[in-house]
Length: 503
Image (cartoon, rainbow, N blue to C red):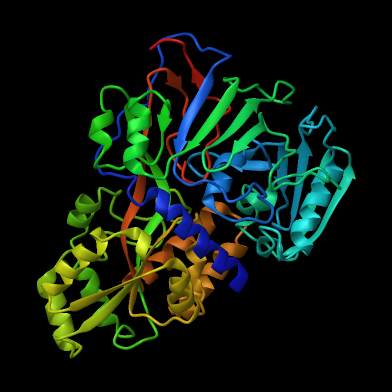
């Protein structure tokens, strides 16, 4: 459990640097639509923020690597849409037994790896056995309930679980579910041998990664001949590159700079599962008092905070809109400084002093707003801005903090609030029981109802505050059609994107 949750925290922090400033509120404009005919020989140039440290997605975590490799280079039996819905990919069909224990997948015809080798069910079994048995492989924890993985024939894969797991199929949409060639000797850190609609052609570290269309792809061929990812960590430099015509798509646009792109680009605003979480140390006084936690939430003007950071929409509970169990929990909490003062007085904490520990790359906007809001109710907030390794050691590992702020980007991570050992320190037996029931429930609708019930309890317990649900701004040239809008912080499926020669 520790290995998995530590990894998720690291993913969150890495992805956050790309998206913390890449959002704004309001109504998204329609996606850019090209009026010219698609050019099958075109190159699509995409500006991104975070470059992977290497390309070994089996052993390396992080949104930067998943963002470009999943669905484009590597594929799994199933994948997920921008709405986080599960759909088949390498599998043409899949069935789940009534007891939720047996998953049967039928492979599509004609699938081949990029080296020309035909994919069979044996490759799937080998890939998933590696995940199940090797603790160093991404997704190993998600396979803890897997009892067996077999191939009844060359096109069928059967996976049997020891107990029902509502999240198992979703786990297969991530790195854990990717299929690799059995006994492959490819150095995955710098090369690849996937089954996807693109192949890797070159990587100029610190600059660009280039994909080429896989003309032997088993499915529908990609709409462009080449994709060039340009890594531009500076937001202003990214806007300048877009305006200069160096990229046709710029992701993670700083909302303060977005107006510069209007007219030349269409700005789309995409939904994410990014939860800007103000963590309370539930096991440490005075935050072990629910009145204090509620008072802190009541003192925060969430609408004004979102306006200040230009980031997303309000979120009053631990489950975002794109995840199962989402419910509008705005009835639980409101902006009410006077009530906050009353609760603090009732708890004997009129002159409360607290410290906010925050990774330094998040900047100062959120802390400044919190300092101001808390000051209005008599709470003095000191900010401790630290390097991320220090945050991992002090907050995540040692739980030595009062308040903390991190953007948790992982989908379906409600289980953190059902884990009393997680750094939130939140321990509620009813929530833990509801979460266990939700995981074991075979019916997804009933599982979502259980999650919603648990999430309401968590919010009513004021176990944390969710400052906002992130949105991401993408600038798209009128020559580009079909570029994804939602969930692109975690993956960008480019197979359906086209580029025209004229606007």
